[in-house]
Length: 312
Image (cartoon, rainbow, N blue to C red):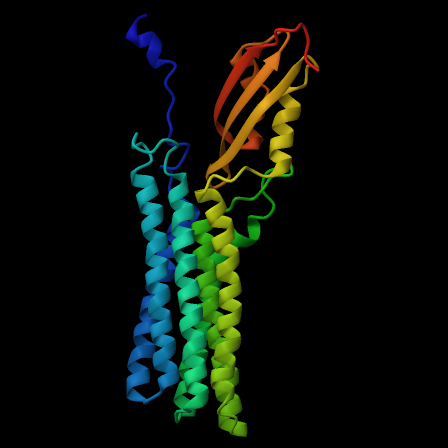
């Protein structure tokens, strides 16, 4: 067999991962904004002697780090999209970036909760006016970041037809949850500072910290679940597998005996299907029954002849 004939059967395993994702540019903008605001908060914290602002600045620093992981994941996935060392392309780098971000969120939630309990037992004096001003500025900045990253999140739920399971851009979701956590802590800080300034309720500051820690922990838990499912090759959603089964078994003579479908990137899947039939068709025939909107980019079909004259 001539080499040029074989080349026609080779196919690319990048599956579109070399394309720049919309979340990438947004994340880079948000990193720049977060870094500037973080610097302002840290300087203000030192100048005004405000522990609350210092804590918020350090908190933003942790998020700038997490967002940098997100940006790195985008660039790495793109640069290595054609690297043959990755069996199914670099789609899972996105999930790994999201998972890493979720772990950082969890660590941050624990630290925030611990710090709040310490603060409750040992209250510190707060320079209210300046702290409130910077907290409000922080909230405005976080609001802008949520808006920049959130456009894609909101529009993502209504994707493909086919009862499709939105394996969104987990990397973008991680970044989005980080800026949401920032915005939330800014809101809680403002409420706590106002309560402390006007009503002398100093305990509100650490109490709001505990509330924030619980919410951030919940977000982290959800993101850890969705990203680890992809990293561990969990089976794709039941409705997607059912659709594939129905399409393959369209002629009553055919039965699917083994079916593995798993995500190899955001909204793209790989599948291995074993078929037994009385009048087996070619693997290409079965592959051709799969519409594009299922998101199947890598499909292997094993066809077996049924020996006993029929398929039950």
